[in-house]
Length: 399
Image 1 (spheres, rainbow, N blue to C red):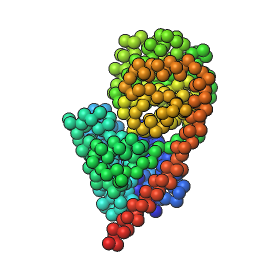
Image 2: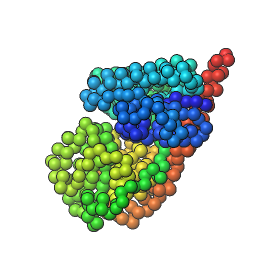
Image 3: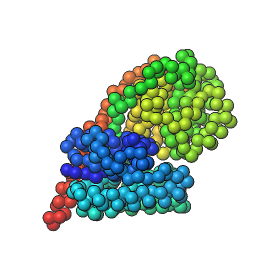
Image 4: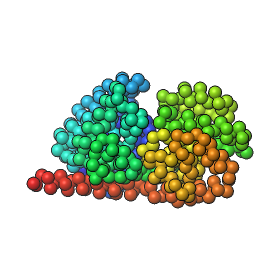
């Protein structure tokens, strides 16, 4: 079986969790005997074609993407034209059995390439514009992105969602039959999360003294990630407990507002905004922090929570979306707070910081829990979907 996977990011080009997902899935599919070709982009410093861990990677050269959202939409359209051109050349050279694309950013090229290859088209939906903006998609460019996503899932032969929550969300928002959507969660490989900092004690000392407890916030600094709620909850907890520090790792459109909020709450002397950090630094921060807060308003899955648990860090997460499927309600591996409620987070956070024995028990249970989210199983289930699509395509060809 030869498959063309299409994604706007693939390591070493990393914008978020999507690159890591496509990489791990691709490499494990190769282990299952699938010949995987990835069509993606580069900034010009990478070879146009190479084999990485058994995966054949083809890259189109694109300029740096603009921060302005309207300009970004035009940039995405240009990237799709370039991907379509290279993809057509690949289809002339190779016979692909299936095209598998990820999110709206490559939907235009993927649909046309599936037609050019006469192959089934499978789409994985990692998030939606409707969810990111809490349903406010009436105005451009959100309306454009929403329309692209709706056309994508309606025209695809099958859809994969990363959680039961996302299956329900995609079915309800876009009017897709739930039976056409297969739930396959993300995976985690604890071996990928090993810290590289030579001296973790020295790293921790940058941000907290030995007697202080360190709280980590990580991710894109955008409204739907809910970091403003975490800052509102941290302020009174720090005033009462006194020996708590925090670190914010990430960047995004809400970064300046979050810093202004931290100054209003008099939090800046108790924590640090690090900006963007690479995977190596992030993995080390998981190891030196006591707690990771995932305060998302909208969260299709919750990869940060999974990574934190695999790294031995207690997770405090919002009771919403895919986080419910990563952190069970019974409090056996992590703690939940009422979504969008800073007071609820404040109570749960203070409880977690004050009870060290309970925190240690949860961390130990979580290490075993994350083993359920295995990339080999993700690849096997995805491979099974490939087989179903190919069988259906052959039957349709015969009839």
